[in-house]
Image (cartoon, rainbow, N blue to C red):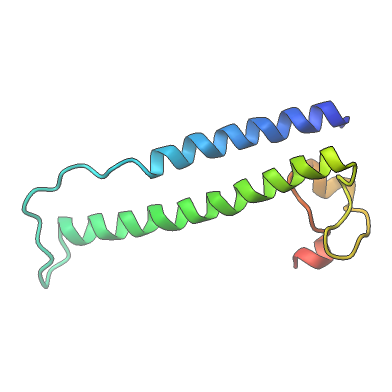
Length: 108
């Protein structure tokens, strides 16, 4: 993959992350008088769903930071070099995760 192709893939990924994050940060629907009693009901289900959305949003933020760092590395001319140990990131890893900034050993 050439630099322009990598940049396009990363920018597409960044746009996709932003779109998904926007959907997760939308205000929840009005729930009216839902209460949290002893039984699992609508209120509990909504709370669990919201907690799941928060966790998904946090993961998207981490991935967004990784994509931004990979784009910066493209600009710096260090794309494909591990941020931690300085060794080359295997091409197979970059094909699967073009936003990878750590080699397999350092990411593990």
